[in-house]
Image 1 (cartoon, helix red, strand yellow):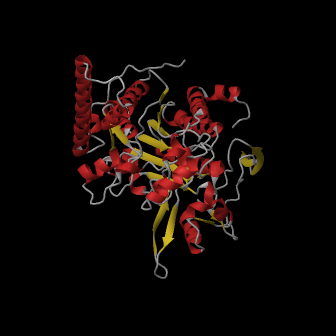
Image 2 (cartoon, helix red, strand yellow):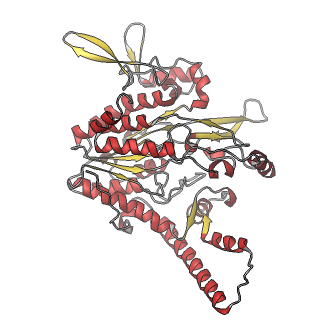
Image 3 (cartoon, helix red, strand yellow):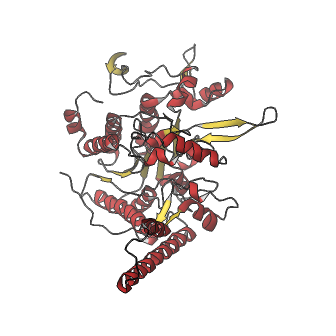
Length: 491
């Protein structure tokens, strides 16, 4: 039985203050009041004009749209200027994260939904929950934007981190695990956990795309920072704080990855993996299309010629020696993603033995979603990941298997990213984008992993795959066995 609930309060400020600084909360509150005041003032003025008959019947339509834009402001540069007090502020016309008079209410409602779900799951009223909320939150750090960050990533409050802190205040919950499967690293969540007074009660796992370019400078051997897939963090673990990061090479690096010694596990989605069957005194092997090989990939360990296994650190050193980033050893695409879940997440989650599992469920790693793409001037884009709906169902079932052992199946999933596929572009779109880019040469193509031109993301996004991924995740969350019957052989 599924219960759909919208009867919950906004997250209280005392909960949000456990994950965000007082200065940031005050800034967001003041900004919301200012925009709401502007909106009310415009409504009053418009009403007075209508009553006095001063408004002309043929009033310029563009004026109304221009006035309404006064209630929507670029959020990232305002945080940089008012909270972080950074000397360099992002160009307002390039800010992807906006804030309006209703944003504060929506963000508090999103965090309130997670708080409500955690309460219901911990007391046993529901086995698990899926919070379909906007805005997302996993990029929001202590001060909203992280120091030196280039974008708030559409996030205002970190709902998952707030839910974790709320759960830990319950006597029945000693440990909480946060599993982030968004295509982008949950840098805000990681920062909050690092500053938590008792990080031993929290585990953070993130699997995400990681990619950086280096631009050659004028001097010999010199280079300057170039493109990086947003947010450009999450390439290393932090064992002291129970933080596990698994960066994945994007599909646009597939040739470079294939040029090195990649994992012997199947590199294609349709390849059959081998799973061992433990018997008395010997091991047999059987084919399985649902799981990846249980044999550790070179990313975690590799067997030497004398049969002695070497550590992941040794493998990383070997990769660095021949110039390849260590995370290339996992491979690319959905099979690399499944290896990360099977080899890095599941053992760590079982060892941590949480009382509650929170999922930052970003669906932007799905095939052709604009969220995982690298965008170029002119509208061209290259995909970074290619997950299918069955991959989300598989991941959910694997996490539930651990939850059933550790915490009576208690899982609260929270929607993060997920946007859709780019629809057909108008014929003039490419020329318009190229002209706009030529007029502003200060912005590199696809800087920060964000679209290089506005047309690419705003024109008719097809959300059908995004919706299917969400449905398969929910079905597996409600009843993983029923999901297998609905979709036999899909995982």
